[in-house]
Length: 157
Image (cartoon, rainbow, N blue to C red; front, side, top):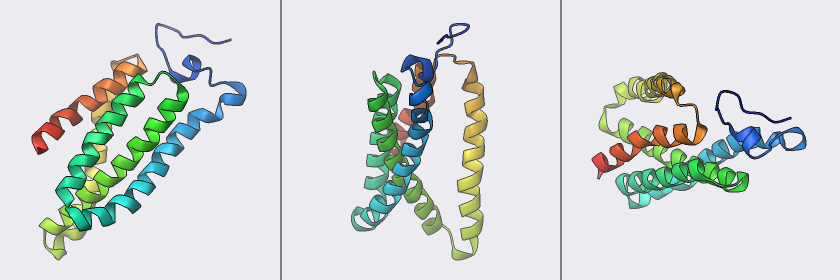
């Protein structure tokens, strides 16, 4: 029996990901991190060849595109594909940001900037994400989470 309480929707009942289909819930997360791995491998050398800024901006543009695509996906298959592609773009941007942070500071500050940028920014992002927990519909939440990314993209242009 599938139900949604208090007007809250989630992906599991929407696409009937129960019983034999329940593995697809975890698969979507695994596809994202598979994309991160592939994005790191592909876009690291590419940023060495054509430059960090073009790779970063392209990755950010397509990550936003695929993120909004996952929020609007009409089927699980398109949702999973957009999560994979979003992971690839996320991996490319994270790698380029890390490399840039190391190139701007002296070698004696590498450990500090690597830890600060990697750990602190994720911690702040997760704390801010908790504030958005009042958005009850998952599609609206996925859309709202990506709005600051659009502003950052426009700022970086």
